[in-house]
Length: 88
Image (cartoon, rainbow, N blue to C red):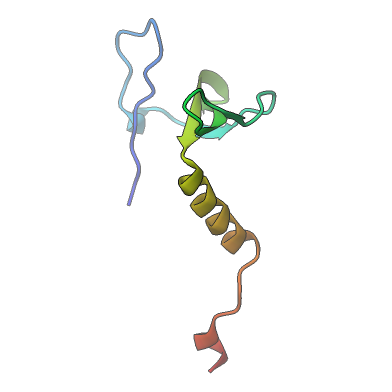
C-alpha cells in the first residue's frame, strides 16, 4: 500500500501532488522535545522535508493509549522475539 499525501504550507496556493514531490520525508525534529498538549496528549514534533529542504513543522499527536501501543510496536521492531512457528 502506497501512502500519498500533499504538504500544504501557508502562503502556497498550488502544491503539486505527492507523486511530483521527489524526496519527501518526515523525520523527528531534533531541537524540539516531545511534550504534552493542553489536552494532555503526547506530541512528537516532526519536520517535513522535500528534496532536503524543510517545508513544514508538524506534530504527531497521540493519546496515552496510542503512545503505549506505539511503544510496544517499536519494542517489537527493536527486539524481535523468535517465532515459535520457526522453531518447529
